[in-house]
Amino acid sequence: MSVRIAAVATAYHPDERLAAVVESALETCAFVVVVDNTPGTEPTVADKISDERVKVLRSGANVGLAAALNAGVRELPDDASAVLLLDQDSVLPGDVVTALAGYLDDPTIGIAAPTPWDATHDSSYDTLAALRSDVADRTDVITSGMLIRRSALERVGGFREDFFVDFVDIDFCLRLRRTGLRIVQDQRLKLPHSLGDRRVHGRGPLRIQIVHYPAWRLYWIARGASTLLRENLRRDPRWALKAVLFLASWTWRSAAFEDARARHVAALARGMRDGLLGRVSLRYLPEGATYRAVR
Image 1 (cartoon, helix red, strand yellow):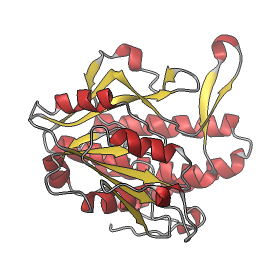
Image 2: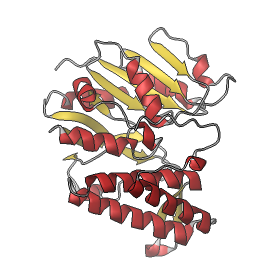
Image 3: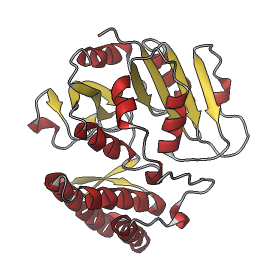
């Protein structure tokens, strides 16, 4: 397969790293779409990017990750046979993208991905990485660093805008796998990425690393997980069990380690309820956000 790659990079109040992300993408990508979700009309780093191979989209509102990705995909050139998705802090060396593209020579693979790497702690975010081979089939991978076969993207459809931010990637991966395509991850290819405020709690062998999010973000995490739990309970019971364990883990960690634990646990509980009932609580949108759900 001769792979012509185009990239979609999403941003929100970006800093100078966004320019480095775009520059790195252009080493292997023929075209890059930057979708800046920063609310308002004040110039951002994205507005300073000047390259005929780059298109910058700004709506003046935070429309969520899924809507931003969908907007970016609509602007891709027709001759792109693969799409690389990037966050504003994901600077991928060109050899990583080239290696990922090689996996698409296998027609059974719809997504090839690197492993998310915590550069601050010099460790993988995946606590079970050591139990898998260097190249492994995965149920799902995170959005940033995904290299998606264009025909697979068109077959699966767009990203799910009612999820706003969290579980957009997992929903997409689940739908892609239902088409019979595989998702592979190469742990030797590292993606420097930040999942948020990651702190170590405890001492000695009892230490645990926790990613701290604001309460509004926990709502969307819980709503996405419980929505997919409801939708996949019969279709994929093993994944549904995984979602139950995920929600239980987030709940006890928030109750044990968050400073404002009552507010955080309440947000998780509301997200679980809304996901199981097919509802949404717009009061958990971040400031300046616009909800454009299509479902």
